Length: 133
Image (cartoon, rainbow, N blue to C red; front, side):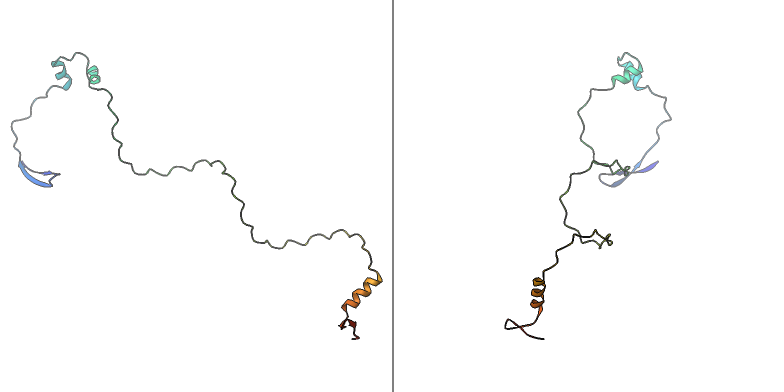
């Protein structure tokens, strides 16, 4: 039988010819049976347990795995600290007309002198004197 062998490091292929020599052989001994032949005393379970060594040192961390699926939404967090006072907002729309207020207290009537002074103040003046219009 002819096969090709590819060595990954060199990336080269080598033709190899394999020949079948003889027929199928008989089953051999198990590793446990060989251990018994070499002096092990105990059951197969005890032999398997004896193969475990002492706990070794931690290995180097592996590379990061790919991101997992997105988890479900969590519970709301605690309220945060109170923020700083913001800038004043824009003036709002005028409000609805209010109800009519209560009548005010009666005021004092102006004196005749006050009325005459007010009228004179409104008249056109010429060099400080009242000018007929």
